Amino acid sequence: MVLFSLTGAAIAALLSAPNSVAYLAPQLSNSVATGKSRAFLATYNTKTSSSSLAFHNVDNNNPTQGISALTMGFMEEFMTGRDDQTRKAANEKYLAELQKRVERINELEASIEELGDDEMVAKTEEFRKRLAKGEDINGQILEEAFAVVREAAWRVIEQRHYDVQLLGGLILHDGRLAEMATGEGKTLVSTLPCYLNALSGKTSFVITVNDYLARRDMEKMGQVHRYLGLTVGLIQAGMNEEERKKAYACDVVYVTNSELGFDYLRDHLALSPAQTVLPGNTGEFDGFCVVDEADSVLIDEARTPLIISKQVPAPANKYRAANTLAENLKEVVHYTVDLKNKNVILNERGYKDCEKALGVQSLFEEPADASGAWAPFIINAVKAKELFNKDIEYTVLPDNKGVGIIDSFTGRVLDGRRWSDGLHQSIEAKEGIEVSEQSKVIAKVTYQALFRQFSRLSGMTGTAMTDAAELEFTYNLKVTPVPTALPIARRDYPDVAFRTREAANKALVKEVVAAGGGSPEGRPCLIGTTSVMQSESIVKALAEEGIKTELLNALPENAARESEIVAQAGRPGVVTVATNMAGRGTDILLGGCPSTMARLKTRAVLFD
Image (tube, rainbow, N blue to C red; front, side, top):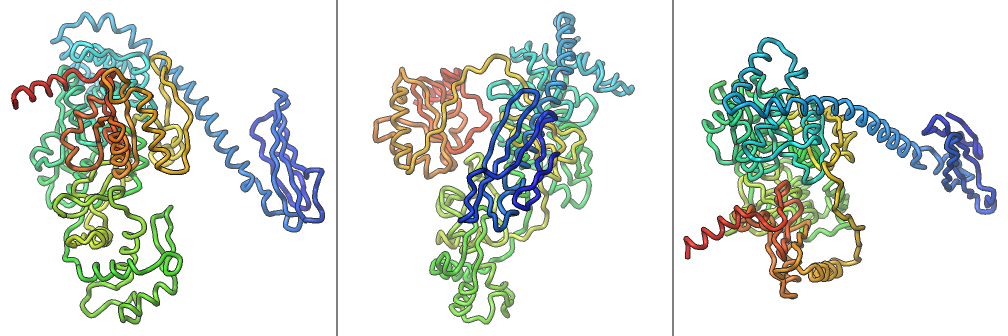
C-alpha cells in the first residue's frame, strides 16, 4: 500500500496486484478561482507494462470530500475484482481435481454395462451394507454409485450422463451450488447425489419451485431411482396428513420449497409426534437436499418468510374509512413514498389532517372498542394505493371472492397466501370487495433458517455467480460453474431501450412479424413480460397484426393448460406470451412435444 497526499488530504491507494504502483495527484489545470480541482488515480503494472487512469473532482476548500477510496469506487471495485479472481482460480483447481474422479467413473462403465437388471438392484443393497459398516461415502463407493446411476438412466429413460453432468453431480454431493447453463440437464444431474445420499438411510430432498415441476421430475427421474430399488415420494398441494407422511418416508422426495416450509411449521404446531409428517416424527429434517433454481428459492423468495396464521374478525368499517381517507391524501403534501423499501411515511401535516378528519386526538391512541389505533389502518391504505397495483402485485379472484397475490418470480397466483398486518384487508377495501378476516401470526420461519438445517445442502441453477458472495455468506454454499457439454450456439444480442412502452411494443411486434411468428413456416417466438397487464397488452397488439398467440400468465383460467402451452411453445410459428418466469424450468422442445400432441389429438377425437 502506498500513501500520497493531495491538497492536505491523506489518500490511501490499495493496490490490486503485487506488481502495481499507484499515483494519486492533482490534475495540472487546477482552477484556483473556482476552488475546484481534479485528481487522477493512475495505476501502472510493472510486469505487464499496462496502466489505467481515472479522474475525480476535488473541492480544494474541503479536500476530504469526493476523493476517498470509497467514493471513488476504488475499494468496492478492488474487493469485488479480487473476490472474483480468487473464486475463479479456486474453482479451476477444484474442477481439475473432480475431473480425475470423472475419469475413474468412466473406467467403471464397461463393467457396469455387463450387469443384469437384478444385479443392478443388488448393487443398491451392497452399497447400503458397505455404508452401514462405516465405509466413507466420499470414497470409492461414490464413483461406483455414480457409474450405476449413469447406466440405470440409460436403460430406463435412455439418457446418459455426460462427463460435465458427472462433474455437476460431484459438485452437488460436495454441498456446493452448481451453475449450469440452460439445457445442460440439471434435472438428470440431481439423480446422482440423491441416489448416493439416500443409501445412508436419510431422505434425499429435491426442492423445486412449483408443483408441476415436482410432479414432472418425480415421474421421469423417479423411474431411475425405482429401477435401482429406491422408493420415491411426491408432495403436492392439497395432500392430507397421511399422504404427506407416506411420501416423506420415501428414500427420495420431490417437493416445492413452500410445501416443505409449511409442513415444517405445521409439525412444530403439532401436539404430539404422531401428528408430524416429516421424516423421523421430530418436526425436523437433515440429510441431503438439492434445490433446483436455487437463486430464485434461496435469494429472491427468501426475502419473505413463510407464515402460518389464524383468522380473527377484522374491523371492516375501519378499513373502508381508511381507504376513503387515503384516496384524499396527496403524495408529498401528506406523505412520501419509498419505492425501494415498499414503504410510505406520513409527514406532520398528514397526521394532523387525518386526525382532524377522523375527529381523534392521536392516530396512535387505542379506541374504546379495542379495534386498534388508526395509524396502521391509514398507512396500509396508502400503501395499497401507491405500492400495490392490480394485475401486477395482485389480482381480484373470480366472482370477487377475494384478492390473490401474484408471485413476481413465477407470475402465478399464490393459492392460500395472504399479506399480513392488515395489508390484505386494505387492498380488499381498495378494490371495493368484502373485507375478509385478518390474520394473526402463530408460526413463522425464513428460508435461511429452514435450509441451513440440512447437513448437506446443495443447489443448481443457470445464474448464480452474480450472487456467489451472498450465497456463500448466508448458506455456506460455494458456487462452481460447470462447463457446457458443447460450445454455446445461442446468439445473445444487446438490449434495446425505448422511451415509452408503446414504442417498445411496436418494435416487438415488428420483430415477431420478421421472424414469421404466427405462420406455419415461421420460427417459434417466446415473449417474456413482467406483469399480467403487460402480457395482455402485447397479445392485443399482436392480434391487431393478425398474429394468434398463446397466453400464459397468472390468471387462474390459464393454469389448467400451462403444461400444454409450454410444451408446444417450440412448434413452428407458435407465438407464446408469458409473464416473468411463468413455467420456469420446463423444457421447450424445438418442433414441439410429440407426447403432448398425441394427447391433444386423442382428446379432440374422444370429445368430438
